[in-house]
Length: 78
Image (cartoon, rainbow, N blue to C red; front, side, top):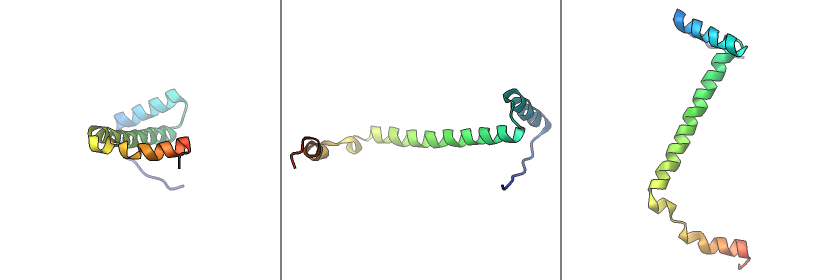
């Protein structure tokens, strides 16, 4: 498995070790979990921002054109 070397000051290193010990995991695993959570949170924010932007544009939300096609599929009128 590839590795990455991190340099942190003494205070941050101590906090990482303390949090890892509190969670009963290694400092390495605690860092992996923290970075993974942060990346997933950023991806979620990007998705949410995209959907919120779509919701503000009424032209993007107009689905009237698809009503007849949906009725054909659902009701079998095709």
